[in-house]
Image (cartoon, rainbow, N blue to C red; front, side, top):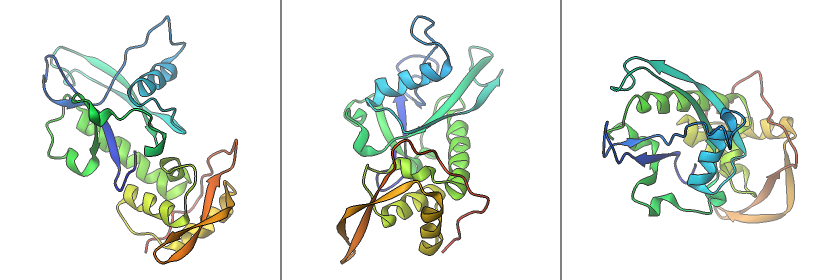
Length: 210
């Protein structure tokens, strides 16, 4: 989720091992509900956020003898992007479930190897943000170029050139301009939205830094 900064959803463990520590939410495959692991992951996301993510994909499998003190374990990890406006339920109001700012993760006691998993997901997201239009899935249904720029910069933690972003937006063909503008920094800014049934566009070149 992106709301001024990039956030990750964590839950607090209520049992050993690592009781009281934060961890990434997980779900076992329910063979009566899930045809595959994609369905398991999406079911877990919807249960915690009441949202259906616009962007959702498998990150990788994490396995090893040292991941869990109870023995060898395998986790198939997914990650998704959700706009704050799409969340009907606010997990932060529940003690055991909370949106955490990524900048605070380093100082938290995180269970298992989940801090490494978060770092891996963030690195992959940063690469995709440089070479694709994926950051639009962090935004509300209607947004400005300035808001898209801010989303990308929050993900990659670097400033980008506005002209480079505008060229990318035009080349992608993913967005449509609305007959509406909003005030932004003392001027009127054009509102955009994703075209219906559009597919994510990837580019050969990275965005230019500011």
